[in-house]
Amino acid sequence: LLILITKFIFIDSKYFFLTSLPNNLCKLTSLIVFDTKWCSSLTLQPNKLGNLISLTTFDIQGCSSLTLLANKFSNLTSLTIFSIKICSSLILLPN
Image 1: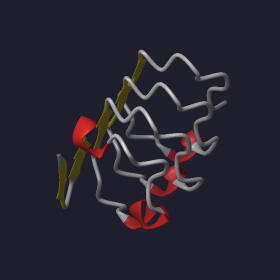
Image 2: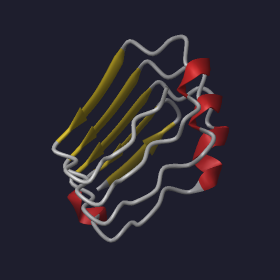
Image 3: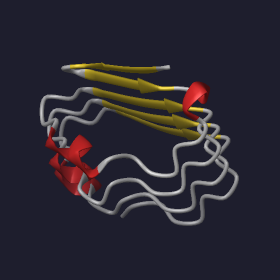
């Protein structure tokens, strides 16, 4: 299930085949919730996540192939929830 509403994006296991998220996701500057669950093939996050300046919640769970997160989280001054769970291949977190 992929639900994209102006301010929310939810991605779950029906999109297990995703290997990366589209770069144009970074243009959603009004996005407040980014929630990705059980996308086991996801390996890359867009490099410009820092453009999501309204983001308050960043939640990733069960993305077992994810190894890196973008390093541009410093611009996310509204971010209050940063949660990563069950991402067993993750080796590098953003600064």
